[in-house]
Image (cartoon, rainbow, N blue to C red):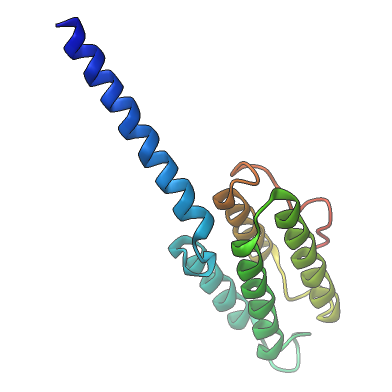
Length: 146
């Protein structure tokens, strides 16, 4: 009986370890632009920004919103390919600084409270999926002005 229990526990351990390794491999090779959660948040950011536009009153246009989406998609491509935390954090710093510049160009109206939280969530989630940070760790704070 003890032998069967030991064999069962060993089998369970090996199976679990193998599944965890497969998940790590798949996560490290995934295109984060295709992650359902990230896609949904990014779409919500875009819709929120576009809905806020009031012609003649808002300091940004749909073109600025598209630029923001392009910046985020470039970031997701870069971090998807990153192979180390150091490279990943370089991508984080780059995207945050690019968003700072774009938001400044738009008189600080493009990235409002909801968008700020959502953009930070995407960046943090992408880093977390790559294994570079914890899900509750704000890796944007050091450079973020929005």
